[in-house]
Image (cartoon, rainbow, N blue to C red; front, side, top):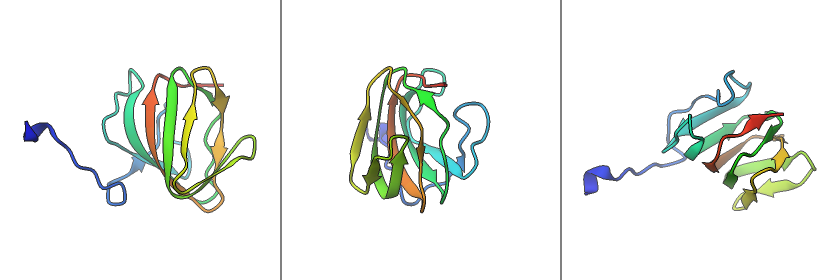
Length: 115
């Protein structure tokens, strides 16, 4: 059924303030592609502006993302660059930041919790 298909251009979408943890996080926005907020399952496009910082969180399930543009710096100073596909296993924790901004395609399979 072709009416059940959706095509998303990650470089041409409407972003809304990132409020995944209940409050808006400064310099971050997202576009939900196929994301169930309650279950924490699905995909979304995450845009982080220059000097954005995610909150420290623990993964309740797998979290994976591919860097579409820019660079992301993890809490252990590992730098993820365009084209990198990153996997965090359930129970892992971190936070990330960006100096110049970045665009990520995120695949989340479990609810994250703030730490």
